[in-house]
Length: 157
Image (cartoon, rainbow, N blue to C red; front, side):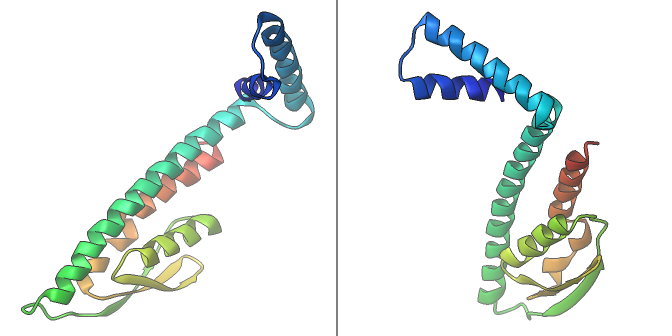
């Protein structure tokens, strides 16, 4: 936060000299200390936020990769003459604790072609898939593992 405040000071000032830089350091330090003292801010919380943000970014990249893989699988299923499509509805339980993580998991499953989350009731997910192979190992998918890690980081573990 301190660095961000200082950079904001420099940008908003529009000039750069030693006097402005020193004054900006003092003002940024004062605002930083005020935030720590009276606004329940701590550098540890900020570090946790940046770790969580990096996990969210990696999750997004994994989601894009899984969407591309599922697209290839769905096209293969649609264009295959030898393979009989076997639609299936699967129920599975997850150990995700927060409603946010469960919602992200449900949306991630729905975003990947060939699968759609029908319902989420408590810890139980109901998923429809174009083929049985598309939902194999869904309860321990890469999405679930990443979301578990993000929950642990958000808790501070």
